[in-house]
Image 1 (tube, rainbow, N blue to C red):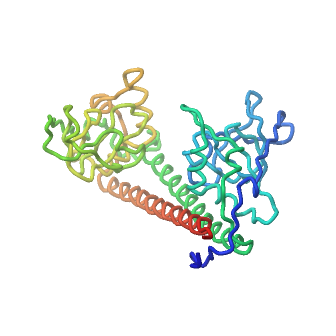
Image 2: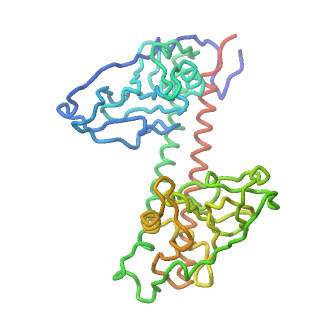
Length: 386
């Protein structure tokens, strides 16, 4: 192959195995606190598609993890490799035995490139193919060490690493921005919906939710006239809009009718915080309550009330049923809250909506940056010689 890919020539590449450029570190530490270690990483702390570790647990005496890792080493989740969990440690610590600790060898290789080789989709496919076990499939280093890579020259490795780390830096900054806006939004929600009575303006009305909402109780039987079906699987916790919809003709059970602009509230497991404003007409599972605001408020204000931490906790504590806890229109109607005048509600909803729009746009940018980074990984590391 003679064409260059994004300025990177596929010529003069050498086929090597992962074991040739990297090693698995098997160092155990049985007294981590005495060595000044405080952080422990499990698989639940690794985010798919992200090299950044954003969460961890504090090391305790009861903890059974002993595998030690150092700053700069790579942590790869060997259990359920299809989850694509790999991160670059930026601190020393202890991790689960379901995590492989990998570090680069220095000879004829640029170590900064290794995280992206392991983050390559082809590597994950290989890891999944070498995994065994039905419920919790795991791979092993002895198999991963045989994974083949076509390495470019040292100069091209450096150029690739520089470009990919620049892309990763954009992703990390984007994710930090999202976190800042989300924190700001939560502060606003708390300030508006969790005020104690002595801090609420006197002109705000203390009112029950039942006096602010109207239930749309229209049923639909099979064959359903409306084509779009919404189940709880189409909700994302804490978000105002549906993820999608299904085909109503595939559902023979009785459903509820909703119209564009209606509030759809998931009454099953209310702690999951599922409430949206619909963007279309359709039918939904009867596990969803279809609501609208009356003249005292608006659906745009109501949706943020339903997502407020105080309301979610209140409904969760009063739900009925052990395995499948539910709430009802009557139960949520008993919720008492402080309602500002309509002009203030419109201002509050507008500010919170702008927060959501900013977060959505930033998430889209991060997703696009991640997709571009994976494309670059494929192009920079995927070309081979004929």
